[in-house]
Length: 70
Ligand code: SF4
Ligand code: SF4
Image (tube, rainbow, N blue to C red; front, top):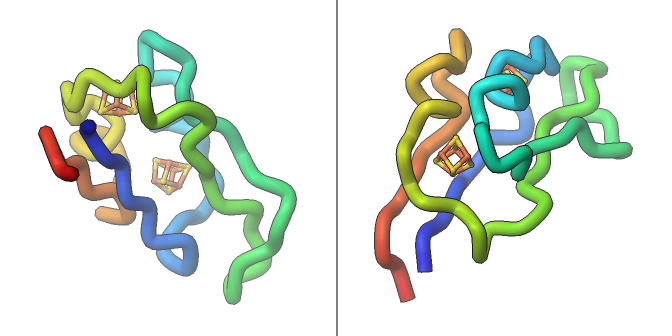
């Protein structure tokens, strides 16, 4: 399965990654991070195709995508 890892404390909730995911797999979460933002969460990792569009667009470098992890 593919995996999207989001560094919660780096996220500034700009939403660029949310718009980048054509499968709408990302959304802002409810919890606050150390900077006072609601960081992004992965809604359904099982549908991720590891295209890495979200990671490419993130200006904070907060997203890492792993293909085919067990
Ligand atoms: S890697 Fe692609 S499919 Fe997976 S969450 Fe990011 S944009 Fe969506
Ligand atoms: S693009 Fe990066 S900083 Fe912006 S909401 Fe997504 S994870 Fe957070």
